[in-house]
Length: 409
Image (cartoon, rainbow, N blue to C red; front, side, top):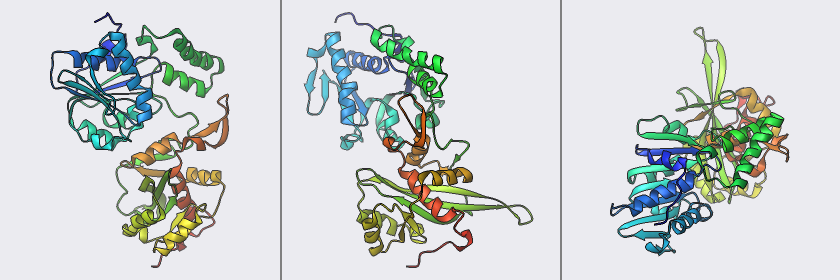
């Protein structure tokens, strides 16, 4: 085997010992290549009957990322010809050991299969439930990596636990980074130093240093505009729901609850509002959405205000007995301003909704300057639009809150 170069990142990964090994890294840190090197050496070792799964969200991500790097590493190490390759199934076999590649979106039948080792590339792109499903079928250890664009479930549910190793790596841990890539990374530092712009500072922080960033220009600030609670508290009254339609995109339903807080003398102190995800799924026809609503007695008990751009779906769902109405068109920023004045709580298990609120940001021009309107290109407004509809319908100042309409079947 030809002599091969191993970066400091590789050496740090090789020292990890706990069942779950989290690698947070910036651009050019060699976290993916180093992890694959480590797994290849494990496959080439004297151990037998290893099943090593390399997983990404989608097949295009896999082919352009980990799989391409893997084949290059095999050739660079001079061991490519020693593997028996099934290209259809993306399985590479060395003796009794195999390394298989599959995607969450395209190979769902393989999620439940058993394995000895698991590597999830760009784990921030997959859901917590999916990760738990595949990690639970792994007998020895799991490695995950990601660019730290924002806090997500890996930080909240795994980092800091007794069974989890956590390291941060960046370009300084990769002695063999190509000059062009290094120049691109240092450009972020240059722009951050020159401009002092939060946009470029965040770029340098995330892609340069590998430190956890924040979505620059986020519209709803966690801890200020919204908080996370475990459950909707007892005593909170269900008001109604909002529905944002999608097909290739997600259809989302958000429930709204109101909790009135009183002092010891029965005087009202404040009102709190809770948003709970009731649907978040792509590929939903009017028929399927209606079936979902009809099966939920709470959704059936009050108005569901809907995306007015799909009147044909609203008519079909009304014909099926759903309490849906068309939402009156308003300026998006008016609804956002209303949500800012209220403050609200999200529910801990509503992973997709929480991720959207953390990612929902203002659009920017080419210089990074905010345009003052939400960035529609990122497609993270599904649950937010649904929440906006129901909040506008039930809580706008123009509506008498004491006279909330109820659906009569």
